[in-house]
Image 1 (tube, rainbow, N blue to C red):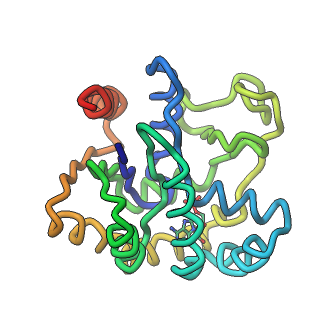
Image 2: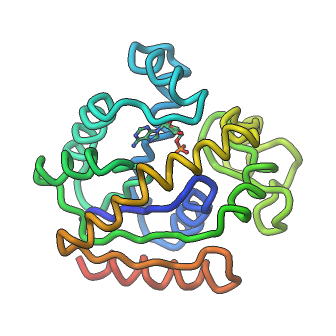
Length: 216
Ligand code: AMP
């Protein structure tokens, strides 16, 4: 079963996934394209060197690089799997469908641009496990400043969360990524949108997510 978690940068996908992992018996495998790319960058691989040039500018890494990487990883994973940050263009979505990898559902987490930009301003990320934190939002602060609650590693700022790059990433999302939702709907795949700026969003997401995975 494949679940696509969809939403603009800083819409809160990572935080919702982190919460849901605490509610399931077994950890749900998540393939987060951005995390996989950051690992490649950190390890200085060929893919990483190429990807960094695009990522640092808030641009998308070329489709063929991402498709190869993600479709291989999807095929290596059994059972329930969440895709975060893939597919991110209509070309990527078509490549995934043509490879026979149909999602069961797309869950869109919606927030306004201004809310997302505000979150980017104070987001910190664990250098090791990738868990995200925000200072403005009490429920998402680390217990010890600058240290990850889960693995004790230092929290850092992502360069692409700086205002100019964050805005650029939003523009790329609106132009290249948002049309993926229309394509999915046109292919008959269920798309459900949750307003992720409300107080009920966490509960709403949990209810939906658990009902989807319990149907398998
Ligand atoms: P994220 O962590 O999902 O915000 O992704 C960080 C960056 O990685 C993006 O701004 C892109 O440069 C790159 N990236 C992540 N996923 C993709 C994708 N599916 N296609 C192209 N580039 C991607």
